[in-house]
View 1 (tube, helix red, strand yellow):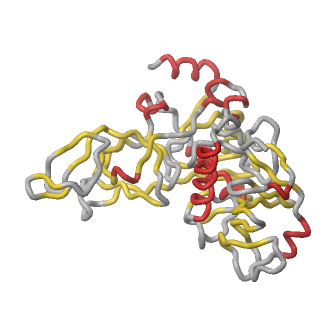
View 2: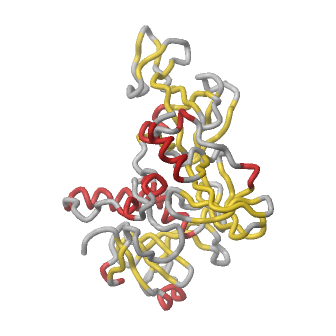
View 3: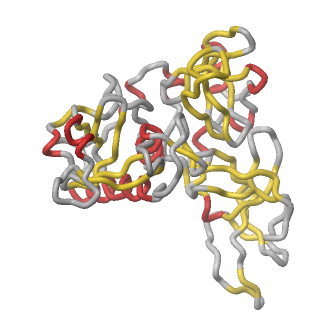
Length: 321
């Protein structure tokens, strides 16, 4: 057991998500969805009731899960800094490093896995992790496979370029302080800030067309705050999971007219990712749409949402104003 594991076990009962998606509920009953956990994510157990566990996630959100889905954190997943994030919307993990291989599972963007450190050829052979596909050796093309270990101990292969080094962290569960979530995003150079703003926007836009699902966080279905959360988390920034500005998190209120790319627009019970100049991308249950789409607060635009323009209550940003 590592020193980190020992500290965590003394402090609380920690668990890890083994499934591609674990549903969180608003109450100790499977009646109203609240959130989703993804494979490899940690949580702290706070209470048990009627076959459900009240848990607190690594991003400080609370909900109830089926007690039967609880699993302790395995030794291999104790050192969280070595984990990799699934960076594509869906990544198959196969039993063999070949496209014809039997599928072990499918993971979604934001899931965490432990990489084994080597890639393989579809015709045999190995290479070190970090190299990318497309090169030729002895007349064969590297197929870009990498061996991964899942939280339940199973091993399989996925494409190396599906994974990226993890950017977010478990500071909240490890240290017990919300300050660990906030980070230091206020001192970015203008060029880096522009790149980060664009990355947040690109992540949000990648979900275009995804159906609306209350409490969802994946390409199978996502809600408004899930879209905002995932767009930031995949850039390494943990924000509050619901559609409001919460103290202790990195999003701070700004004048709505100053909202630029990557900032957030807040409405009663709703949040959107700003594209700048009054346009935004959001997951909406609006009749005739019910998916991730682009709309505008500008009257002259064909996708103008007058109902949202009238209900805009705040804007938020992680960047200095």
